[in-house]
Image 1 (cartoon, protein in one colour):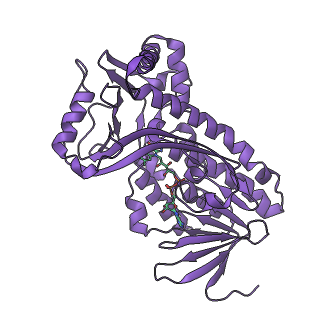
Image 2 (image 1 turned 90 degrees about the vertical axis):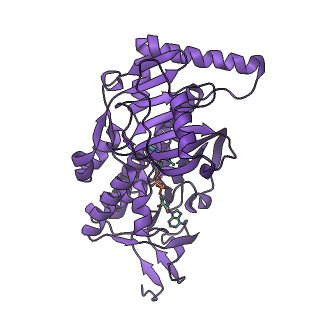
Image 3 (image 1 turned 120 degrees about the vertical axis):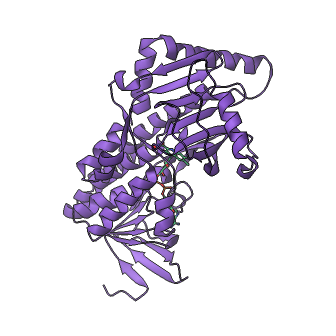
Length: 396
Ligand SMILES: Cc1cc2nc3c(=O)[nH]c(=O)nc-3n(C[C@H](O)[C@H](O)[C@H](O)COP(=O)(O)OP(=O)(O)OC[C@H]3O[C@@H](n4cnc5c(N)ncnc54)[C@H](O)[C@@H]3O)c2cc1C
């Protein structure tokens, strides 16, 4: 087939250079499956986007198995404890010693993405930054295509044998899959903050406070992520550094426990807690991975992990299809991926109920507050609850 100057062909077209797209691209490239990655942002923008940090053991295993873990093995930190603080006191759980006895690895998402881009390009991978996919076509034929626009405004048509929609929660690919949508807007908003300061101790801290949730998530020795539940209409700029420090100190206060540090707030944004499960996550030759397949609230730090593990699942189905024309695993991709997605969503939802004060007044709200106290009490006192928590918290 001859292609025009504004037309390019490959085998697997990957939409989006986040964790899902880049893990998929690296695995396929190492298996000699030709890939092209299309990413609307510039390389610098992608490398600077601070988001996740907590990698589950299964995600780390995927990265190690495919030779993608040099950075996290060198600079990632093992993390195995979390603490729940409330006006009733503090409970620390060493989840690395509970359940299956596995820790997290803390490695900032932007560092992982930087490593994955470098690895892919060093191996000869093709990645078009500044290229926005505007339309998806022909997914029920053997040559699906996308229409994209590059940074100079030129339109390019890319064709492939398969499309991988790894373009995140606001991408275009999920709109091309006829699917049922199960969704929840939890009515909860967080200020998501990065503070130039070390964490107060090694633990993740969940502050379960009547005025709203507050959380501390260690990232590096110099930078810590904090969350503060706020009004849905809040404007991050209206929150001065002083107001943030005060609110964190109040909501994370517990007798005898270290107070959060104070340091310059170097990033402030809003995260609205929303969840969405699509079923199925494939149509014709288009397959969704990561946030494109499911939006999950960051309450249990599952999103990047679902993206990494889902990318491996799709790669393992694509390789036999491309090499030997064996498409059985591809046909089953959605049914294989969805149980893990549902389990992560269920645990994230449980965490939302655990961490946030029930909204409203009256006996109904008071009743739900009593249930929240019971859940915290179970975590503090029941070994079997602690084991189940640890398995769900670290597992993916
Ligand atoms: C504040 C915060 C903290 C978080 N903490 C954690 C955590 O600790 N652990 C965890 O597991 N998860 C966490 N998450 C979630 C995690 O960051 C996401 O789940 C993860 O980024 C999903 O990866 P992805 O590759 O599916 O999508 P993304 O990372 O969103 O990547 C999608 C890419 O597609 C590109 N794109 C979109 N549309 C187009 C288009 N039309 N054309 C071309 N390119 C396009 C985007 O620019 C983007 O680069 C957090 C999220 C937030 C916001």
